[in-house]
Image 1 (cartoon, rainbow, N blue to C red):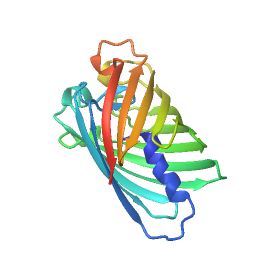
Image 2 (spheres, rainbow, N blue to C red; image 1 turned 180 degrees about the vertical axis):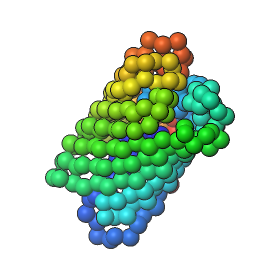
Image 3 (cartoon, one colour; image 1 turned 30 degrees about the horizontal axis):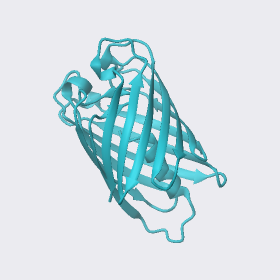
Length: 230
């Protein structure tokens, strides 16, 4: 899915006071050299085309949808899905000028696969200025043999200036991941550099995991991306 930080950021904006309560619709499109989700390539280290739409209702609530191509060998072990479709919603509210809390729900759909591969996640996030802690729970995690999973995310965004930012991320997934044949939880991490120019964001990220597994999908890698908000 698109970064949890961006999804929760939409909820934060929705929770901020606004003069008008009319819903606002926005879109996004991204071209990337790889689609990595929690440190694991979903496209067998090949390129991805991604995009989505978000609706901010101006009262704390938000809805959105997002899609990407995937590779069946990497993200669909028993089927032929070449797409991922996410539907999500959230509610965010500010506790103070620097502290906000967000609640979210995400439904993952893999067209072409049996419905048992689709799954849900419930999200709770706390943001303090540019630092955020997010806990994700899935009662039936994809690739985990139908069992549940917890994911704890820590993120920090450093604004260098109006055009340049650096994102730091580390997360612990507390469950086995069948895609890479690991029976234990694992850590994923990334450092991303973003440069905004003429309304377009250029990104370069180093992404990795602590997997000791025989799978290229979990190897450390550099990911290039170019994205545009609509």
